[in-house]
Length: 318
Image (cartoon, rainbow, N blue to C red; front, side, top):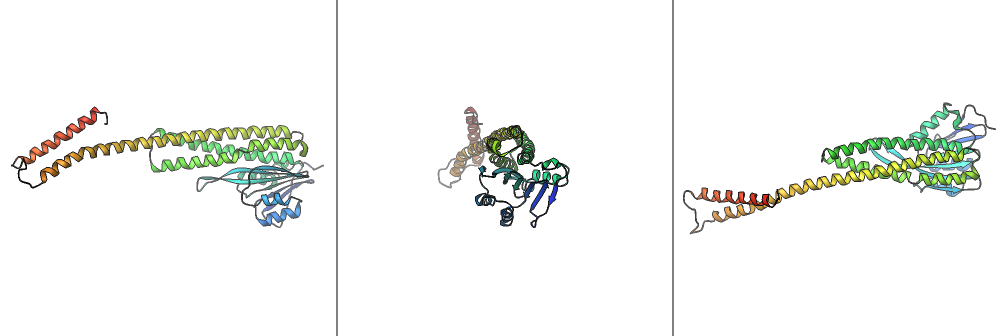
């Protein structure tokens, strides 16, 4: 029986391969996805070649593969680049065996880094309990809660976008912010859309592979968290699409108003230009060539301008 005390930290030749051991159970945390790390796993475990290849870049589709003595699970999770303000997807692979859990990722998720650090410092010794299902549950729980925190911040961004559109902001950076948030919501949506399905499959596989008695209940809890994340993401996507459409419509109306004014101004100036061009011709017999000719022509132009303006008002073009 594995002991319930302090988890023992194991060393590896590679700094990117960490291990925590409690009794005969180990959590191996692989923080990079290069050939070196995969070769290390190949030496230590009897993993299928296809599964090891799937742990290497490029990103694979989310899936569960059942082997004779372990489960191989691929999850996708979002990660946020604070400098660029852009969200990306990153892959997390789980190898779940009888006495081990192996996580393979690119060390971009704060939830895993923080939790492993807590376990290594023995602040939470229960993280290596001797049952793969429970360890995986604790890791997934923190990853899903990390998504929830992202959704809270994203909700704040969407509220800011909504306020700007309501206030009539039409600055160039506003549309850039809307598009950035919209792209982040789409990335988040593509990351979480498979979580509920994978967790449901894990429940069915876990009946045969996992000995933890509370596994089904724990997976149900994770399934509810995944559903909540999906519902919020879908709601945010609908909201940001509506904000984008409203902003685009607002800009289109403003542009239409400007174009209408310019068109009416052109329509007004065209006959006036025709009058001035006609009376500017130096031909015999042209009227109004006396001392008061300028005032007469100017008066005609004023009358034409007023009549044009009255016509636009009558037609409700202004």
